[in-house]
Every structure is written in C-alpha cells, then in structure tokens.
Length: 297
Image (cartoon, rainbow, N blue to C red; front, side, top):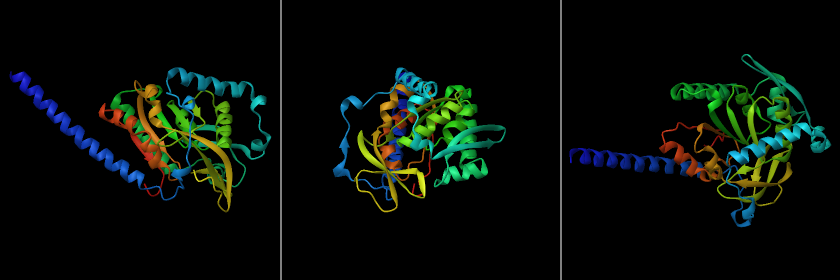
C-alpha cells in the first residue's frame, strides 16, 4: 500500500509539472505569435497544398533528399542555371581553425557582402550557438555525429555548413529557389558534411505563398501570402510551406539539440506548426536550444 501511495504521489507531481510546463510553453507560443508585424500574411488568400504533397519525413525520405543532393553534384550540367550563376561567386570562410569555401551573391546581399569582406558572419550569435552545442554534447555525453540540428531559413548556408564542419547532422529548410540552388552548390564544395537540404519553408499548415526580397538584399526573403508585390522588392516566385511537426517521425529517436530560426518575422507561424515536436522533445527531457533572429521575438 505504501508503494502504491508513493507511486500515486509521484504521478500527481509529474502531472502538475506537465501542466505548468504546458502553460509556459503556451505563453511562449503566444509571444511568438504576436511578433509577426514584420511579415505580411493574407489568411483569406492562402493556397492549400494538395494532400499528396504533405509528407511525413522519415529516415527513408532523408536518404532520398541526400541522394538528390548528390545527383545535383554528379549531374551539375542538368541543374545548371545561367541566371543564378551570373549572381554568385566563391568566398572563403574562416572560423577558428576551420577554413573552407562557399558560394555567395556577388552583390546586393548583406550576408554575402559581409562574408566576402570578413570571411565570417554573425560571430557573436555563432559563438553562442557553438558554446550551447558544446554544453549539450557534454551534458548528454554524445559525439557531434550523434547530434541533430534544424536550420530554419538556411539562406546561403552560413550556419548549415559551419555546423556541418563541426560534425553535426543538419536539416535545413530554405524555400527560395535561388538560395536553394546556392545551398546545393555549397554542398558540392563540402560534401563531407551531413546536411539535408529541403526546398520548403515552415508555417503552421501546408500552404503555398510567394516570397519577396528587397532589391538591396536579394538573398533575404520574406513570405507574402497576399500575392501583391510591393515597391523596391523582387518576386522570387511561389514557394511551398510545410509544418515542422510533419518531421516528428524522423527526429523521434534522435538527439535534437538545436532549432535555429531566421525567417524574417515568420518565426511565430513556424513555431506554431512545430509545437508538437517541441513539446515531445521537451517533455522527454531533451534539451532544445531555440535561437530566433527576429528582433521582435
């Protein structure tokens, strides 16, 4: 009887903790949801995705994506895009004792300009992420090759390939067609990294929208579901947005250490679409380091 009573008390305490945690998580989610003033969403004009395009991502799908990247490198002439090639060049990256090359924009892109001149990008944020990952690996007693990272808004691949060079497994979401092209080119230059590139953005449901970038910062896209072009912007075409929670089957048995988001004010929508994944990993005592680069978040 005593053991039964102790078991009941323990379960009650766990239940109370779960309730408190869910309240905190909900408050965090609401904060993200209210921080969308920099992104233009037209909820009435959303184009739904065909159910056949909604995929539950798993290990088999991951291998298919990796094979697609390798095919890009092997059959580069089949994927060659002269319009995109005219806009890019090679640049050197130097971080501590790591040196490698990556493709960047020739001009009119802030990230590329900084990398070309300084051989680096966001040193403070990068150091914070790497220090956080070092803490995670020591706490969990894991090798880097056993740790997974989600890069939401991969851009041209600063975090994707630098963290890949440290031996982490990276799943990168990037909806822009030209950025995705550059990511594949950079993968071909650095094929030793364990990187999976996905040409989709994240949202709270599966839809289609447009992505626009400023003429002075062409690699920095913003989702626009109103399908109305604004002054001094470039329409980079229609994109597919999916839910992060569709990827639970892939991550459920893996050590997910970091979700990095940099999607120009869309962080709240992406977080909403991944709330189940975040909840599962948090309640199972996984450590998730969530970095967002939206100034309002």
